[in-house]
Image (cartoon, rainbow, N blue to C red):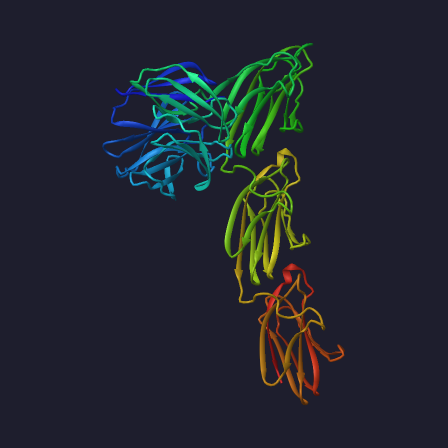
Length: 595
């Protein structure tokens, strides 16, 4: 499925070239609009798979969106007016939520994005300023990551693309310079490869398309010349909501699959399957975002089945009802290329095939699939949240984070449509704790963690029908305790030297650091007292002599404070604070010694 071209005349007339790839297909006229209004972008604002038209009045600063039903006007929505020193330079989905955002540029070189929730303003993201000798000429997705990029052209003929990482500049790709008698008129996907191409128009009326392979020029296709009274003002998908699928005759294969391009919205059509020579029809499609996918096979007079395969031809799921019962496949699919196969070994039957993809806000997989490729969140302090997907084709998502202090740690896994679990591992990949509630019940892990590096694994080992989006929330509230200050054995015990008077310490014991040792000396016999308090989970304390022999301990239950009072001779002694519970028994403590 290719994009179409939107034209506007100097007198206010408007029209669409409904394209068949890079060839003119048919013409559709639109209502004329006063010449003070300028078309500033074509993009899908309401996530229905069809482009809408963004207008701005050059004299009043008003802006409005025409919500389109294919090539037919449906309704209009007005936007807030903006000072005329700012101008709209395009529209595209910058944050990957499946809904278009609006790109602005000021006459002083400033740039910014209105993040839109449908036709409603939801937030602003500023971009770097750029010298006014450069102009924004279009918005498109050149690297097929599901998020829009920005085309620039200098008034001397130089060209380049900002490859964007959401609303942040990612990298720059320079393009060949082109004579200033030509101008860039926008971007659209004209060969159905999921990557934007660049539209050119000459001041003599000639037109052409640069077919792009990511940000690299691939080839040129010329278009019919059009009077200079008309201008190309945008490109988008204005075809009907049910773009036809052509029947594929003969025994098909993955290699000969009919290419539907990037699936966004609905594609539907009719075919014939069955008999001795036509048992398989294959269709290939791609998704740029995690999408809600629906397939239906209806209108059967004989039995026929439908199967979904991944990009490598591996089986995902099938529907194989008996007789002429309709078939259906419904669920979430992650970004990638897929094949749908219609099959029958019965007498020939007509069929109606419909494929629908409704994009979510999730683009490519944002988390690694093992410890090595885990998404690095850096030092965790405060709260962070992430949205991603796990399922049959991506069953594991890994995240890595570090803590600089003993911290109160909270993890939540919510927004599930199917069952998923979460597990916490230490820096060496050793299991610490997991949460594995049934069905769509949210998962949570809460407790104290000592400084170090940790991994979170979100997992789903179900079939295609178990695919789910999830919301992962992580928070860490640091305590005043940094790295472990007490040794973990008699040999490495923290040396307090000669004890005379009072000393106090704060530290941590738990699953990953269950023992803390302290060593002190007395120069003369005296009364010794010890207090262990401030517990959030159970911990005990033990006193040993210089030869590591047990003297006395305090092991109250729960978080009751521990105390030792003992008359001691001169010599060296050890204090051991211990906790042998699981992750959920981790606790900070306050240790006070007096002699």
